Image (cartoon, rainbow, N blue to C red; front, side, top):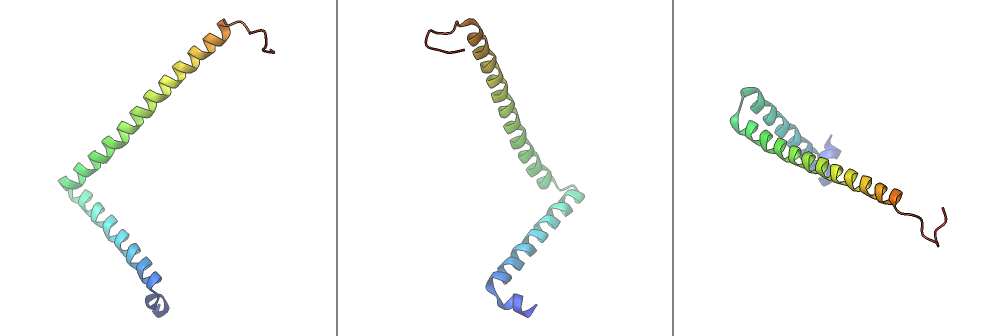
Length: 85
């Protein structure tokens, strides 16, 4: 243990792990108490993730529509003279 504490990198890693543990515990305590600020932050992050999901779904729908239109154009266009089938 003394080797870990004498090493600056080890001490920094230990401090980071301790900070993570403390922050997670504070969030969990806030949730259990029904803290309003924690719920507001969670709502903000939820909206951000939902907004991103909706945008991806809209892009996917547009790409699917574009793909279908390209397939229709390919089916309706006769092959040119220089193209092999």
